[in-house]
Image 1: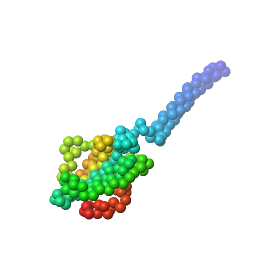
Image 2: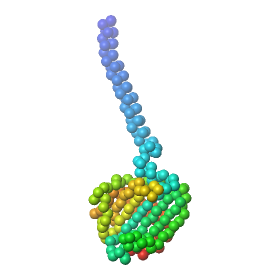
Image 3: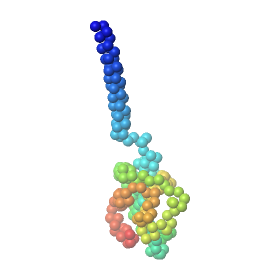
Image 4: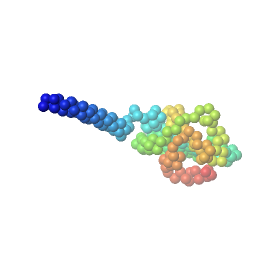
Length: 204
């Protein structure tokens, strides 16, 4: 009988040990899964934002966003471009003639911090600054997309560029901008009521 009891114990102990190891392994896997999945679903904090994103959503005085649009490369008399600059105080549309940027018209509207905050957060959610700035010849936009439009998007602080990305309407010149041109362009243009009438003579 004693030999039988010893035999049973020696048979049971390895099984118990295996069960304990399995339980410990399961607990470890569950803990690891919680860390991975729950950490990814937490709300993004300011420390998770890139420096350009933080600059974008900053609504303090001196911060602003700008979209500049250059038309097709034509004779100087016919060349047109425009820009929209928005900050917490103003929304400004300026239309230019010629390559020396002679001002044809200027529309200046007031703005509020609350309105500007909504805009920059919308731009951020739309991936406004997702791209990486190009350097050297890759960043030279002179004469690029000669029959189409060049779009330049900037974040500025006290008039100094924080980040500058560009793209064109030509499929052969995508540039550094890496978001939806249609979405971002609309977010800017709807800030200027009746912008169509103010830019209808540009030909693009």
